[in-house]
Length: 258
Image 1 (cartoon, rainbow, N blue to C red):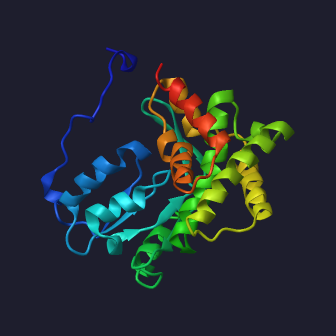
Image 2: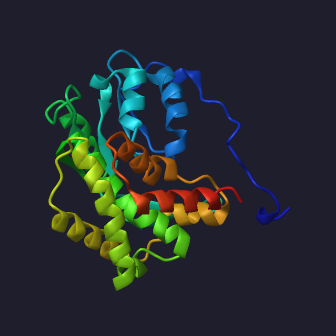
């Protein structure tokens, strides 16, 4: 048989128990919808001092991790490294980024993470310290809610969203989310700083096809419930209406049904 006539998969291979209880650090890098299941699996590999880093997109992961491990063992983090699956078995590098760490009330501080950061630096993964953990997570989420659903609906690359009308819409979606973040007590830059950051990300990733667009095209579940839908749900607690995030959530959710 030729290679294109069969498919090899390790999806049904169980995890070797030899690793149980041995992890110093556990990184979760999955789609947002898989985080809770992977946190439960991670408990197998953990011991009383294991620390957990969740790099998945969206809100709610710090809370989920804290309920499983305790907030003192969950390290707030985001990443701007990018890859995308061109086709089964082929991963294409989408650009060098960084792994950004922060701190919540009782999570490890920069000094306590110095050994981990040296290891990541030696692997050219560009670790950085971002200070306040909630601001770090929300800053990434605001970029995601502004880019991902609009790109997924329009079929545009990130760079194409820089066109006047498109960029204005992305900005309005992001600033709706920023209002919610501020009500949550998150310290963000002013609106102009947020807009400049959004423009910079789009310029740096102009050739990227965002993950939500890929998911929609492949008929896979999206991360909308951890992004724009989470913004809508949090806004409702404060009596705040977020119509653009509501609309985008409903449109992506309807696409995900087919």
